[in-house]
Length: 455
Image (cartoon, rainbow, N blue to C red; front, side, top):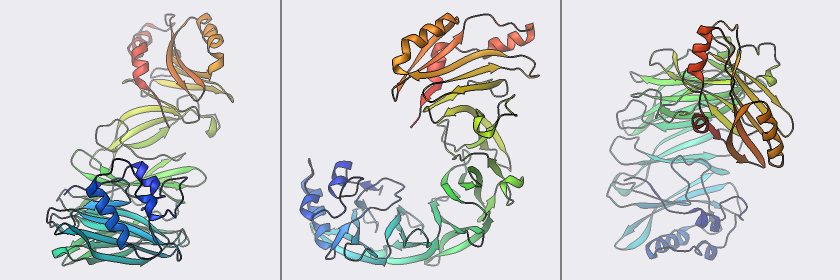
């Protein structure tokens, strides 16, 4: 049965689990939530009654399918949800645990309790790793920043808890990598002192979660910025590993499962040495165009900016998808200015035909997008994006009108006004270049559709 997460943000704050709320909240305060049904109230009271003395509810740090202090999940396949809640002892901050309750004959009863040593619950998920069609519980226990975490996997045959796997990890992902309706576990191990890293594949076999394969990773990284399991193509899943290297750079590794083993799509060498995806700044893979497939970001310099210092380059983000073999195919380009808080998606055709010039100071900035053509002999303005303090709006717009540009308002954010400027003069280009330039021009509505505020 699909996981049912039952607490709203307001109720969580009552539990003392949201930023700015006290951790040690008296049990009576936990129940002061509006619009709570009698059944939910009964379940919560039952959970609180089963907590050990001096224990308070706690939240996992990573909860892939939502965030809740108490989860309702069918763990034994009987069609009825169990209630699962994690706790932490207040007197001894290294005592953690969980209570699991089931409703029998109209009354909530504790059917299992887990006790562990650690400082926090790092991870919680419910997936079918045994292949019996029932969700198992995966819990990551953390002992602190400097020690490895430990994943414990629990199954509930016949309504009784059974531990089927226990392994240390640095990071992890869980999901169905080979489309067989059963989830695999991938544990990432990183030893920065020895500069060694590896990915370990686990699957369920003969009553236990057992190692199926392992593959070496780059151990010289600073750490992982993101590990994401998602669609690498329309029909295949992959594990996207984004990692920090050097002062501010990053690498991306893509692992897929083939014939029961892991494969590093871009090879095992260090990315900067030609064996993978390297970017001058930290980037993270994502489904940028909302097509259901994860894209990998490849930053590139616009033509004519090769002599600029790295920090001054207006980098273009070129998003690629795995081609299903050992390469990438480009699907989308865009430009970000994170300090100003916007993204501009490129129209089709702009990919290798434009350059960007940026000018910014403490309160305002402009970004000139120019057509350059295939041979880079000509330049012609296509668009300028600009922002400035809201109080300067009338003066700035008057200056822009004097320059014979059509002004396209884009909105306001953080006390700043954002506009686009479209040239109204005819291009001074040779005939062939002028034809290509005209194909790349965009109208005000297209600009509004392609411009997005971020964060």
